[in-house]
Amino acid sequence: MSMSVTILCENCVGWPGLMGEHGFSVLIERDGKRFLFDTGPGASLPQNTKILGKSLQNIDAIFISHGHYDHTGGLKYALQETGPVDVIAHSGIFEMHMAKNPFMPDSEPRNIGCPHSKADLIPAGARFQFTDQTREVFPGVWFISGIHRKADQMPSDPQLVLFKSGQAIQDPMADDASIMLETSKGPVLILGCAHVGVLNVLDHIRENMGISHLRAILGGTHLMFFPPDQIARVIDRFESFGIEQIAVSHCTGMKAAIELGAHFKNRFAAATAGSGFNFD
Image (cartoon, rainbow, N blue to C red; front, top):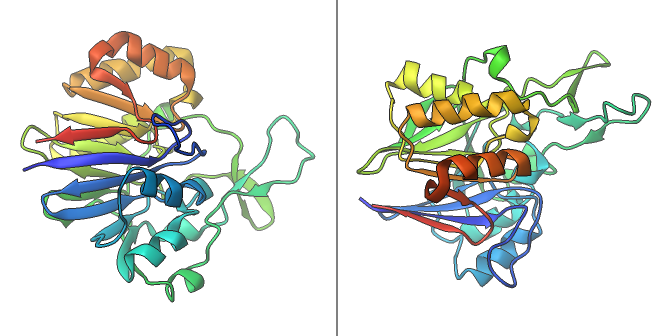
């Protein structure tokens, strides 16, 4: 069994000529199957895919981690390249996700949700497969959703809001999801943003799936919204899973990334656009 993971879109770049863009997209090639996890905001996906010598043709499925624009903006372009394809996501990805500056209470919230409607994406080739619970969608490939949220393990991101009955409430990000892929030496967990809290994700896979070891964690951890004393708790939890590779990106935050790098040393990497990770 072999698997390669290529970061197509991310805030920072690791190759000359690539475009850095706030967002995330990953190409996964695993035993003859090809998956796209998230699509970035839209501008960087076509350029970076071409420069990296990758193709979005013959993709077996597209996974969406949540409905923010920086993970869904490139979806329409991706569908142009893939043709009709299953798009696996939580049913809440089309919620009206908003951002409101907590330091400017009189400011108008802005829409940060998916810039494409479901009605636009279906004719473009999206065959939506909505799942609100964790399930195996391909052999050895798990869509991780429906996670119990312990409040003390949630990132504090007060700018994210939803409007219910005309009132702004904290966005619970019910659509937040991750994917986990089995390899011969243990599963690899790939996070979009981990809005639900990376510790809650780890609790979920341990308590509900019996997973006590992970080969790697890749992607956005949202640790930039964790208080400093919580980072040590996250490091301890990562170690409890015996993780061999930590490759963080996007919403992890510089301070948290520095602490992770200082602790994990040669097990740590920055998952910038153009980065590749191989697992046998």
